[in-house]
Length: 447
Ligand code: PMP
Image (cartoon, rainbow, N blue to C red; front, side, top):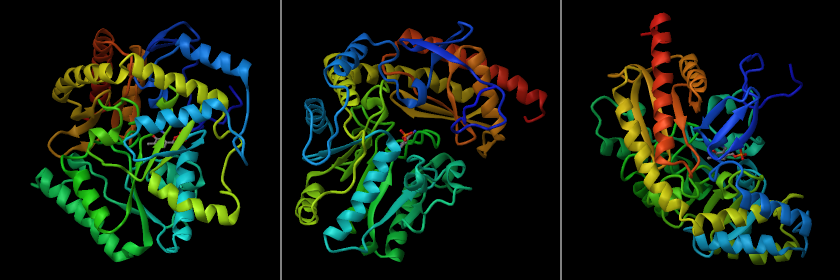
């Protein structure tokens, strides 16, 4: 028994793993059992556990300046240095950076910036946001309204209408295609739907289109070729910003520096960063704003007096110091290039799982992947969510932590430092988990 209200957990759930310590790509429970962290915590522990340089950076910063804020003319060296570093790395022209504490609050910041921008540029109506079915963008009151997963949306009465949030198709060809539809026809249809939505609402009422380049929590969906090129053409035609949520894809996850690079998304207006920004050693997020958007706010803000948005911990020195060291390690140790190679190896090792009787689709890019569990390979018909839950437990039993996503899939997203030998271990354990799940599904008469 504990007195914790657990996040994203069934309050009656009985199975729990008490994680006590971590080292490299492994964590250990309170019985000393070792697990390969196949989801990098929650898609975030890129450099693994126990990285001495990050620990030293944190310790040194605590001694030097444990806290300072950034309100009203204050700043500190680590925050400025981190902003410079991010600006150099991101595929966003003349980026300016607002710091927060989580992916959710970074997305909230953008909702507010978009509304501020609409007012400041004399187009107050142009403030709606298009998000996608099954997208995940956080869980605060505002970011939760951007998220489309039912568990995060239903029952909370999220202010979807008040915030002007519209939803369009999710680009999952395997599940979303019409019978006989080619990938290209699927893309044309859903991008056509996007344009219809824009025309029906009026482009002058829509500020931005929000997307994870490759989704995470909704099942690791890699859109078909050409999707983002066509989406961007429609957005450009209607003067709508592209807002890239790189909270999972950012920093080497998908085989390139950013998901935007992997998916040919060019110079987005807004980019959300968190998680691997600090390898999850400390909470920190960044709302990256393209230079022209920021410039349009400078005069209006100075007329008002201040940009009245900020958190006590915006740019916390500890977060900035650890993030800066994380980004330095990424560069110095060529982590993204190495992750691209191990990522290709992971995808190669996972591909044969498509032959497993339970698996309808294996998908992913770089070091992020998912297996779609199906009861009928021809139709893609899924199992009840308990089957993905069973697989998760069976893998944990075998010493592998992964995560059920979207009810019907099992996601993998190991630390970027994982080696090929550890990927072999991961796929061996996955095979054990899948076979145990197959036996379970047979015994329950589900297949
Ligand atoms: N955006 C995406 C794409 C995410 O995956 C997440 C978290 N999984 C968030 C936003 C929210 O981040 P946080 O949990 O740090 O608030």
